[in-house]
Figure 1 (spheres, rainbow, N blue to C red):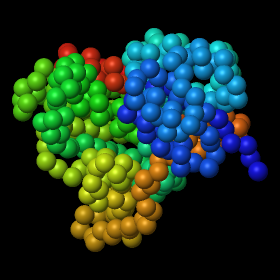
Figure 2 (cartoon, rainbow, N blue to C red):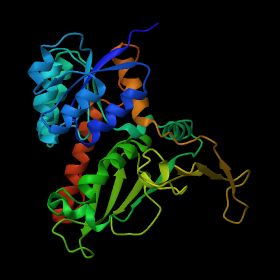
Figure 3 (cartoon, one colour):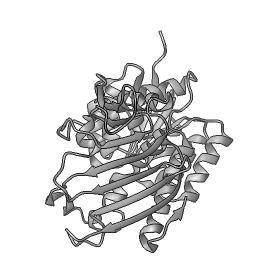
Length: 345
């Protein structure tokens, strides 16, 4: 029987709590301890009967630690993550990798220098539906990818904006909702060469945007449009269609539409469209539904994957360079919003 991996959670905010729940469902891991200074962390320590440490140094001096999940604020990612990598402790780092590109590069350099695994927490890649889409594209079932359309339309209620940071720089849908979609597009379709983006705050009138459209030119030549808004009453966003998080009611719709020379595909409502013989808009077009259930345990799948990486069975599915790539794209989008120009990534 394989030994369980002892993992500590550093930061018990929203995502830290989600990781604790995921660990409790995994058969491959033990919750070693938590690191935090909040009052909530004390009750968590009692609930799970695990040690509570007030800082990273205390954790580093503990025994039987195999790996950590860092879920602290973005500006602390570099400091915390590198302290573990220097001690050759594998890290699952919550997205984004950091709050700036130079900091992200330092984290990656430390992982490489210390030959210690670094994973970035883009958990959507651990959904079997996403794996199936990747398989179909890589096998050429859609032919050459020509274009894609990604929707992230949802409506956030008034109480959401009681937190003042959500109406300030970084609090809009670009800063909060975009990162997962950027990673997904790159994972499925390849590298992005240029971006051009436009934003609007015409609905809520906050300083921060409530709507954005982003045009992406991929290195393959394919084009992609990403349309995002938190002021639209609609069922078309990944959160509302994938069923990964029970906090969001599932709509059984799709948010991604990918088109190629041999067929097209929509997901998470996994359906493909194709011709049986001649490809012509004058011919009947057929569809095929793939009966693969969207997984509500992607965070558990990610934990299990992390354990296999720590055990040296496999390499990280989402590594530091993936995290850096998403950060570079996001930086280019912000530059385009400011200038209105097409920006090279």
